[in-house]
Length: 163
Image 1 (cartoon, rainbow, N blue to C red):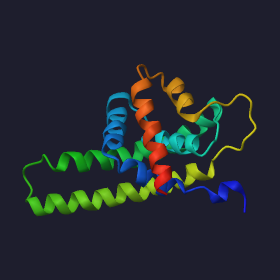
Image 2 (cartoon, helix red, strand yellow):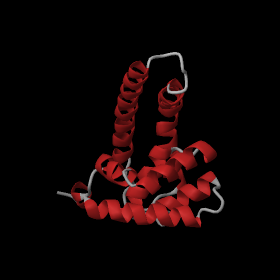
Image 3 (cartoon, helix red, strand yellow):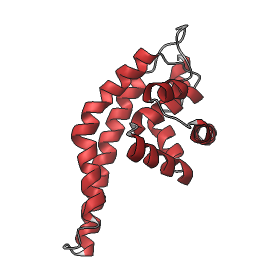
């Protein structure tokens, strides 16, 4: 068994991390206000707490791997789920059923994309690599990241301890 085989899976890590209310709010804010790909963000957090380093090229490849599917499927599904509750023309029970069905579809797609990212875990030994969350901040040109990076790192450590 390799050391990577002993790591908690990315999906389980993401469920544990995202279940923390402050992390969910942070992810949604970064997604909505800064167009951060939350799947890549969570992958970077997982990589970081498992000791991996990441190059800009590896980060770009991961973002590219998920971007098309995210834009073509996840974003429209998310929009349907968010907007149907405000439609006002449908019965409440129908709205709740549709929201739950759409959420299940979103989660299935996210799980698939996270598996692809998990398989793209970089091997160690690259001297040009940096901590994954730092690489993401630099690539996305996110300003004032210290506060939310600290929260995300603490949340990731807590999620890892819980697994």
